[in-house]
Image (cartoon, rainbow over all chains, first blue to last red; front, side, top):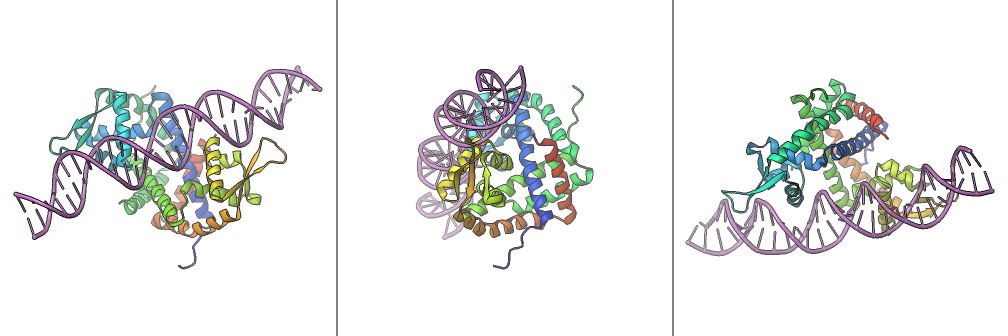
Length: 151
Length: 151
DNA sequence: ACGACATTGTTGCGTCGTCAACTATTCCCG
DNA sequence: CGGGAATAGTTGACGACGCAACAATGTCGT
């Protein structure tokens, strides 16, 4: 146990700005999606993952991995999305344990409806306030962090 | 309604790296605090806010504002921290509606015990992977975002 | 081929957090 | 001053999510 290297003022400010900015940003995006399209931010992200997958479907585990949440979280989220009519469960051919979550037409339509407003919000709340250099720094820096934190 | 300006590949990657890196980072920090000191990340942050306040106490509303959570969230969190013995409620002299949350000695001790490991984790998970320039970009960029998003 | 072990998805349970409603108090303007 | 509006903190109802346990199925070594 060596001496603790505390954060200096500059690092403190970086840490606080990041934490608080992130919290405000996510809250704002969630509110925008919820009020304009009736989708939560987490549900929106799940729909995006499905829409980008081949056949618009993903194994439950892959959806969990892609969204960095737990298996049970995905189970419940998919049930939620199924009740909304945006996703359906499809049994796996090659693995009888397996389940696919598949985007329905209604789900794709909902996503198409929600996407423009969401993207505009991401621009208005985040990208419009960042220079190209800052965007590059964030991209590279967080990609490196992500690589080291990935399990 | 003009045409939507979708995110280009670079912006997409920035957005994804940021979101996923952040999710992994917060999860990792939460786990570290929880396993090493038995404190959740949110509770840790509340203790920090109190420890930095004059008299180690804060009005409930100020604690809510500082932590960017709802009033009810703070009420429940403070009850939780009170049960743990780390915080006590003190009535306000000048406003009979008011309540202070005050850090106890045990709370200060818990914070002192948890802080070194947490700071080390913040370094190991985040700062060690970022150049000075990237840190500066994040600090400035998020500070600007935060300023625009603040209510 | 077969038994030990791993994996998949779901569920019960507990925790955490928000919104809306409520009481108590304070503020402010006519 | 007095009374409506604003504010403080709490609570109830509810939704989201993680962990651990579980049954069903698949995988692998011998």
